Each structure stands twice: as structure tokens, then as C-alpha cells.
Amino acid sequence: MPSFFHKLAFILCLSLIIQACSIFSKETKEDEYVGWTVEQFITASKQELEDENYKKAIALLEQLDSRYPFGEHSAQTQLDLTFAYYKNGDAEAALASADRFIKTHPRNPDIDYAYYLKALVNFNRELGFFERYVPSDATQRDTLFTQTSYLNFEELLRRFPDSKYVADVKQRMIYLKNAMARHELHIARFYMDREAYVAAANRTNYILEHYEGTPSVPYALEIQIKAYKILGLQGLVEKSTELYNYNYPDGPVYPEADPSDVVVVPFIWSMFAFDK
Image 1 (cartoon, rainbow, N blue to C red):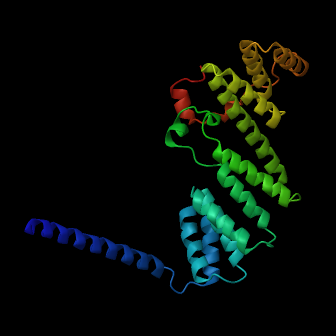
Image 2: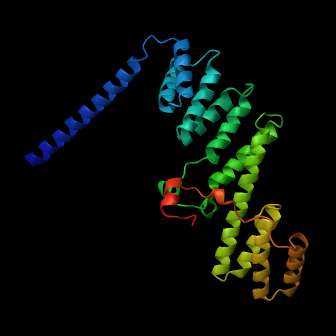
Image 3: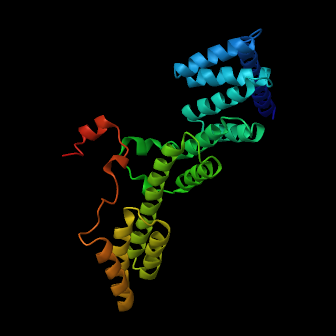
């Protein structure tokens, strides 16, 4: 029994020491900025952003935001902080910061930028370690962030049709729409491989209805024709075949996916001679 109490006392003491060190470290960090003016914080944070030292920029901007929450600098501070979070890979913090700006400054002239950053966060969600170093097809994975990003960009276009980001947004939405269509194509093939032909045909119908004009359409029609043939639905086979031949007499115009979509570090690619 004494041994148990000795161990418990040791654990409690150790916990208190760690907590004290944490508090001391935090106070020391905050003391670093004692006496700093708004102008000092703004100048220093701007320099760190220019130098791409995003962690340091975040520390400065958070101090500026907490010490001087009101004033002409407030809106720009929140925007800079959102950008710094985004560039530092802090997705959740960036989204929360963007939402805060949108709620706090709904009539700010840069409000469209906040919506744009919010969409970019989901557009550029970080890949896992494995996907960073091995050739990877992102459309085979869950498309939650892809769909969310598309809706974010769609909202920006609806709210700010004259925004300077419109041209870029439209290009990104084309990319996202193509990615979502190809994801559906993977699902249709999955069903075909498992002889779930009705499900495969339904999935290809979904592609034709919702992703018209994407490179996936002719490939979806090919799967659809095959599924209908196996199911013995000759009328539907003829209808889909007629549609395919009319729009794609020489086969698909574009490859199913752009090879540049594959994410891989160049030296890894060369090492394993993936391009040979």
C-alpha cells in the first residue's frame, strides 16, 4: 500500500511540474511582445508572411488580434490570419477564421476573398504521407472535400459574380466537376466487377444527368451499354449505343484523366522508373 501512495504522489508532483513549465513557457512567450504597438505587430507579421514564415506570422497575428481586437486593422488582421493558417496547413483553424471574418465583416470590400480562401482550404486539403510519395489517383478516395470545395466556389460565384477571383474559380470548378464524375465512374466499375449490373447502370445514369460535358461521360456510356446487354435490356442498349455513336463516333475525345493529376515526388518517380 505505501508503494502505491508513493507512486501516486510522484505522478501528481510530475503533473504539477509539467503544468507549471507550460504556464511559464506561455507567459515567457507572451512577455516577448510586452509593449508592442499595433504598428509593430502589423509590420512584423507582414514581413513574416512575405518570408513565408507562416508559424511565426500566426503567432504575431494572434497576439495582435487578442491584444488589439478593435480598430481599422482588425479586418485585415483576420484575413491575414486566415491566409497564414491556410498556408501553414491548419485547415480547421483557417475555416473557422474565414467564417469568423464573414460573420464579423459582412460588408467588407474583401469579403469575397474570405469566401475564396474558405474554398481553397477544402480544394487543397493535404494528402496523407503515402499519397505524397506514391503515384495516387485522388478520385478513388472519398470526395467529401471535393464536393465541399465545389459548393464553396459555387457560393462565391452566386454572391459575387463580379469578383476578381471568378476566372480562377470557374477553372477550379471544372477540375472539381471532372474529379467528382470520375469518382462516380470508379463506383460504376466497382459494381460491374461485382456483377451488380443494375447498380452500375444507375450510377452511369447519374453521371449522364449530373456531369454532362465531363471526360467521364463516354466511359460511363460504355459501362452502361455493357450492363444493359448483360441484363438483356435491348431497347436501352440501342438507345445508349445511338447516343454514344452520335456524340463519340471515333470514341472518347479526351482521356479519362489527366496524368498530371497523379501526385508523386519527382525523384521517387525516377528512382522506380515509372515513366519507362
